[in-house]
Length: 193
Image (tube, rainbow, N blue to C red; front, top):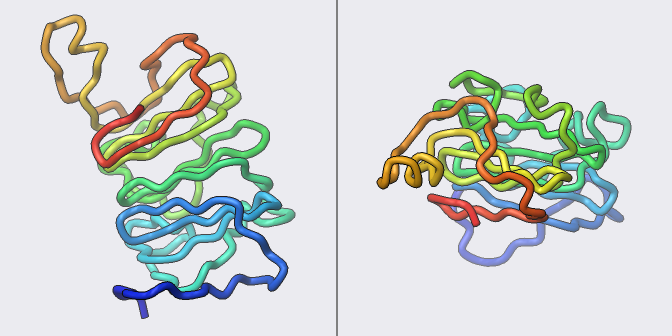
């Protein structure tokens, strides 16, 4: 049963020797990245945010097949959770997203939910280095220092041109910052830094 837990709990992992290197949380789900580059998910599964092909919730960390040893996109270097969506960057620099897509935050050119991890084709020729997800959008950095964003956001580019901030919907990745040697990006519930 998924519910509020008011005290720390030791989570059972699929293998007793598995070590977790990084954890990221959305509103009601979490991704765990193991030291070997595998990804586990748990929490509420609404809109596919866990990546298992359904909307079922999981109360224990469960390995995502695509990101497990021998999986198509194993190993993974970094993970991120938005409020209702998730993302992973492979060690070869590929970006995959899944979950709630209403605002274009998955970067697939649609506003559809994705129930399993899907490669962001528009960025396939770029070596993605980091990813951050906020409530309704996603941002990534590539090896050249470019920042790409997609989803519903207030865009500084529009604000600079018009003198005021404008909210826009962008379902495919577009350049937000060019070649500034930005290595890492982070998100809050309403923006990136």
